[in-house]
Image 1 (cartoon, protein in one colour):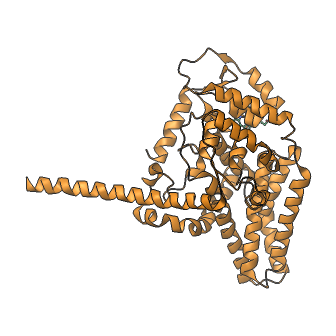
Image 2 (cartoon, helix red, strand yellow; image 1 turned 180 degrees about the vertical axis):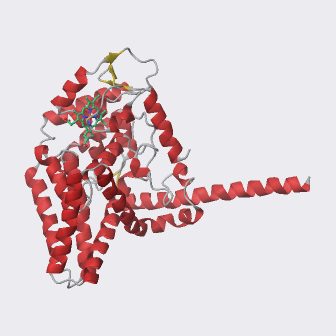
Image 3 (cartoon, rainbow, N blue to C red; image 1 turned 180 degrees about the horizontal axis):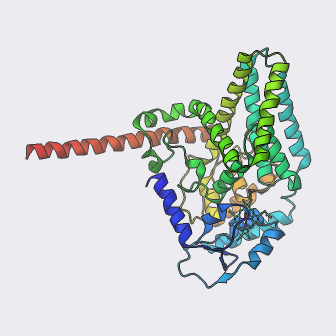
Amino acid sequence: MGMDMETKESKKKVAAKPWTQIHGRVVDVKEFRHPGGNILDNFHGMDATTAFEAFHGHSKKATLMLNSLPTLPERPDMPPQPMEHVTAMTEMLASWRARGLYEPRPLASTSYALVVVAAIVSAVVFAPLAPVCCGLLLGTAWAHCGFLQHMGGHRELGKVSLVWQHFFEGLLKGGSASWWRNRHNKHHAKTNVLGEDGDLRTTPFFAWDTTLAKQVPDWSLRTQAFTFLPALGAYVFIFAFTVRKYAVVKQLWHEVALMLAHYAIFITGLFKVGCTLSQALTVYCTAYAFQGVYLGFFFGLSHFAVERLPSTATWLESSMIGTVDWAGSSAFAGYISGFLNVQIEHHMAPQMPMENLRQIRGDCKALAKKFNLPFREMSFVAAVKLMMYGLYKTGRDELALRKSYTAAAAAVLDKLHAD
Ligand code: HEM
């Protein structure tokens, strides 16, 4: 099924079932305008208990609002889901909260942030001496701004979370914090669900599975394992346009102001340290492209090479089946990759400070074992192989299939002519 068709299908499904079940109560959400946007639509017609707990376990306001919504009779058309997953997750999330694992880690986060800001300043100061090297350093620092804003967007830093997110995403990277939250929270809500997880919208350039492969041309299928990383560097420029357009179309003027301030700071900084126009452009464009490669590479390692899931998968299933851990016990790998190495844990508890995720690895493994679900952990090299070979194999298999269709069609034509 094509992506557009699938999105239309899921929208139809949503419109037909304006109810959701939370903690065993079927709630009427027909008239409810969710303050966190249309993410709730993804849970229309099914249980949303763990999603609610994962995002609102701490929020009295959300709980009060939920309690005020009308109750509907039990739904005979509730999709079958293992409710023991939901109960176990509710207990687990509550126990992590009771252990203080959701408390912000200001010292660790601020030290990380200061190193990144220092790297940005150094890249700008030394730009006239070595524009390409400084571009690579700036790109690495911007990728880390991406990881830092991610922490704010997930409300890991308590009350200052959104200011923190705007600082790193808007001012330092020139992006839109709201665009990111809208897209990324849905990725968490429906990890690896075709048509609902926006991060799978990589066609017609790359295909990660047989369904996506139908929308990718032959030449791209042939080369995707090799072109994936360099193409990411080029793609971020199109992406940058989409994100900036979002802020303007949605009239998010505070975000537009931060974007303009971003350009003003970098243009002034690069010229003040003595860059020529071509040096300044080299630094900025190298950095922009490299941050795309850096982010895409680490994101790809923990998400794309595993199975797609149905929309009705439980939170536990989508965390365990839809994500991969690599070098999960290494703090160094964590800081290099913005903690994308402990993705299973991050998906289980998206609002938990990144620095605490290693502390819940044992619990996550035990839950996976209890419910007979995979817990995919591997080395960095194995994860790279899994991702690259996945791209190669998807391309190769789809091309073989197309060849067999062409051969079959030719055989039918030959037979018709012979008859
Ligand atoms: C009917 C039940 C729900 C109610 C009453 C509710 C209520 C709220 C409220 C009041 C906010 C504003 C922030 C806050 O005070 O916490 C919010 C934001 C949010 N909600 Fe819900 N919510 C519900 C269901 C869900 C579900 C099922 C999800 C999960 C997928 C979800 C995800 C979010 C997210 C991600 C935000 C933040 C959006 C942002 O940061 O831009 N909510 N919700």
